[in-house]
Image (cartoon, rainbow, N blue to C red; front, side, top):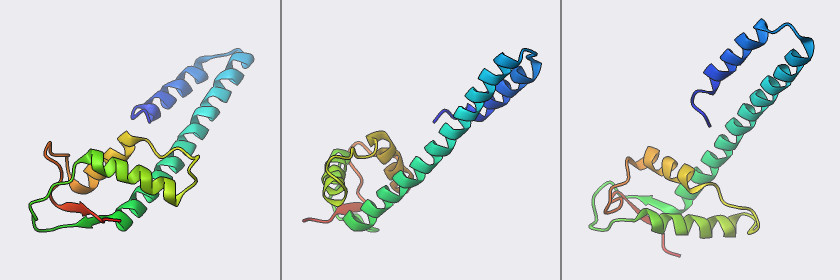
Length: 125
């Protein structure tokens, strides 16, 4: 989502207040309402994605507070997540965006090191 959206919406309202023609105001009002609905839907999707990511983390990732000598590459986690998602949810549903999943992992475990995360491991099936 655009981090500047709130500022843009406020600017749109200022422009709206300056316009006299009712038909133009109607178009802008509809645009504003649609943007507001889009923001609400996007916020709900973020919550849904976060809950799916957390569910995956709780089911498949083991936190290792002490370095075991093994590192987990993000591509391995991504592939595991996609397989887990397909088996857990409908196979015809597209899994959440990879960049959102990576952002969740980095928020949880810190920036991704090139060699992989050392403080986690994946459960083996």
